[in-house]
Amino acid sequence: MSIHDEIVRELLETKSLAALIYAIERGRELEFRCEGNLYFLSRHGPQQGVSLWGGGREQRFACMERLLEQAVLGGVPFRTAWKSAQIVTLF
Image (cartoon, rainbow, N blue to C red; front, side):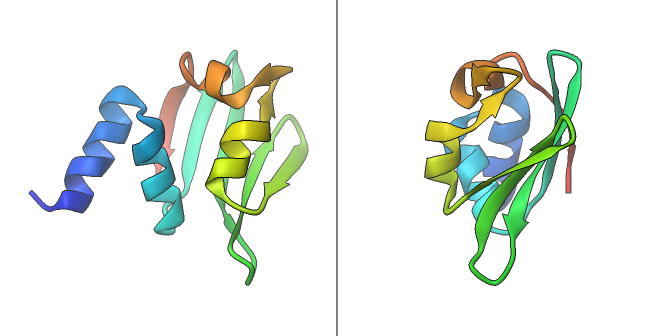
């Protein structure tokens, strides 16, 4: 098993923040549910920032670290909400 496959498995099994950063920074995209809402996370544009779509709006960040520090899911900080999220699809 490659290191990439091991890290993806870690993301899917434990929702590790480090594995999430690794996957998104390498161009993967993620669809997940949290509190009944569907969200989509991916890199965007030539600046390679990160976008989080959910609830009909987009939150943009310069990098994954900023997303983890500043994003909000349904009024709850991302890192808190992520603990109860269910991964739907990793593209």
